[in-house]
Length: 344
Image (cartoon, rainbow, N blue to C red; front, side, top):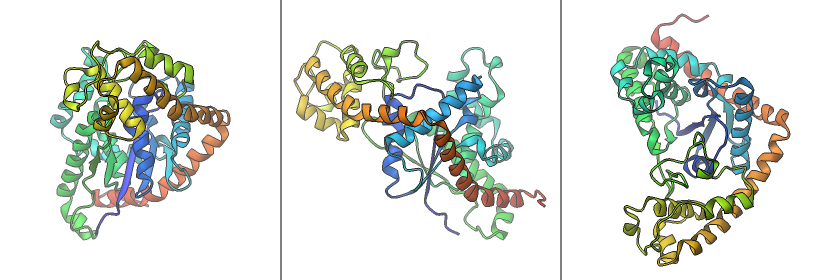
């Protein structure tokens, strides 16, 4: 039985959505709508792998939803929901906890980075987070996942889990009518010139919500004046822009700003340098600020309007969860049958 092409991806509701989230994920989500059936999830279960203030978690969940819609995701054509409203995510994650191997999880670099030196103090949820990510994807038999470079390892684990499940239960899966395996092996979708946006203050560090200084990032809710100010003060080097992409090597801040321009303009870095090669950074920053404010301020304005009506956002999430259940529940039920669970 062939698997229907389906896209799944999620964003954590940890507040202060920024340009990196927009160029690295949300713009890709918007484009994928044209040719795919898409599920876009606010992954609040993932968020609580580190402690979250309950009021802030609810507020941040609505903010991510507002950012999706303001950026162009259509919740009527596609499914937008928050993860905790579909219990199948947690149920399938437990099954996958029993499929995944400790050695696989021990190789996950993100746990090492997030747990830091005191790993004994990290939550068990943070450790098995990749199994929940696999469940998020496979609960819907998603075939494609738009991911950043930093999430490729987790998607590879999801493929390993799917393959091992298919192998472990091959006989019952074949009897159920899936001779080629019950779970598809999801493929990554990594596209665009700015899939990894770096800090405005350090081109070697990823743009992050957790950085103490707000000047390191452009938030989606920043107004035009603040966006322009942050770009003007962004770190650069003393040399003019090169005329070819090779000239950006060993120039991380220049490479980052060129990548941001390319992502916002939806062109290649080569195209950017053909226009601005040899220009000073003051001239380039002026053009980048104009482009960024034109693209981002309408999104921030609409986000504020949406967030002023939380009841409507909650309705959208509830409707999305209902439609997500329609896809997930039969897949979870069949998974339980394959494993040997007795259902009423």
